[in-house]
Structure formats: C-alpha cells, structure tokens
Image 1 (cartoon, rainbow, N blue to C red):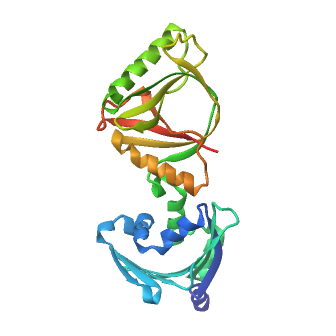
Image 2: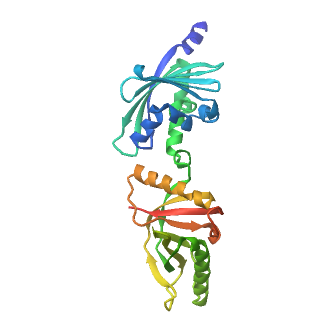
Length: 302
C-alpha cells in the first residue's frame, strides 16, 4: 500500500497540444511581453497595482511578481517558454510552452509540457484535460473572448437585405446633434404618412468631415418603398456579413470601439465594404458629446 501511495506522487511530465483560436502574432506578444501578462493572467490582473517586473534580457528571461504569486519566464529560442509559477503557501508549478503557427492563420498550436505526478496525469484522462488553473488556459480564455482582448463585445453576424428611407446632408459640426434629432423625426413622419412599418433601428453614417463641416446619412429601415417627393430617398441595402460591436457610455468615447473594431478586422484579415454604421437602442440619439448612449457599431465586410 505504501508503495502504491509513493507511485501516485511520482513525478511525471505530461505532453499535450492546446489550440488557441487567435493568430500567432497576437498570442506570441501576449506571452512574450511581461507587461501584457497583467491583461490576461487573473492572479495579476486582479491586483495590477501591486505588480512588479524584472527583465533580464541578457539571460532571455523575466519575472513578474504580484500579490502572493510570482512567475519566472525563461525563453529557450524564439517561441519556447519555460514558466515557473510560485504561489505563496502552495509551492511551485512548472510548465513549458512552445508556440507553433497553425496552418490556419486564425489558430495557434501550443505544445504543452507540464510537470505533475502520476495521480494528476491519470486524473487528466478521467475528467478531461482542460488546463484549468494553468497559464496556458488563462491565455486561451483571454485571446478567444473579444470582450477581454479587444475590450468590447464584438460578434460576426449575417445582415438581411433592407429597404431604407434616407436623408443625407452636409452640415456644420456644431449643428450635428440638432440636425440628427430633426432628421429622425422627419423620417418617422414620412414613414407614417406612407403607411410604412419601421423594421429595424435607425442607422447613422458619417461619410466625411472637411473643415468645420460633416457629411452624414441617416436611414430608417421600412417594409416597402415609398413615394418620397424629394424630401427623402429610397435606398436598398443588400444583406451580407457584418461585424457588430456593442458600446455603452459617453458618446465621445465610442471612438475607442471604432479603434477596437479596426484592430479586430485587421487581426481576422477582413476587408470593409462600407463605412461603419451607428445604431442606437430605441433610436435614442445623443444630444451632445457627453450624453450616455447604448449603441451598436456595424461594419459590413468581405
């Protein structure tokens, strides 16, 4: 019996492969840069203000010390990382991760070597090898969740074909908010006069800005073409793939979502078809830069 207990705790190195659904460059930068660890490693992220870094580039290694935890990372070549995790009161855990670019540009293979014991090795076959509680799993969760990596909920969707009644105009920037409110009221009125049913949220698109002027288009999706008599236009919008980002907060801060979605498009090798569209919950348009909004940014892409 004593011999069996000793065998259960005999050291074993477990070998496996984990796939991270993200491009190789982003995964590499998240693992290779010590400052980036604070973004994805929960034990460090939860106490970011207490994190210290020590970089020994001459020895190709760095250390990250947080509240009750320490990581020592040594590089053996370009994409080979030895990681020693030390938690106060819990001892050490050792890992080796080798990053390999997958044949798919949106996947990265991680060859994992993890020091454990025979009991832990056998347990992984019984309960599933989820890597839970290990750095590579924390990295996978971060890389695959747009809310964590890009800072916003971003989803790929399919949009259906629409009929819109639209207004377009070039106006002074100082009059944008007042003009938008008037445009929406006018489009609602035109739809009602023509017996058209509104089928989706209004969408707003800023075409260009020159000097103190801005050109914009506002469209209201309806169920049929109408007689506009020069005060508006009918426009058909084909269906297709769209990237949708969700934002709540001060309207002027939506620019952060614009940048996050541009990064998402570049990371996923997507090409935009048109300029982004803004859609507002319950068509509640902002009245100024500081107004709080609940909105979506929609980007048609190829």
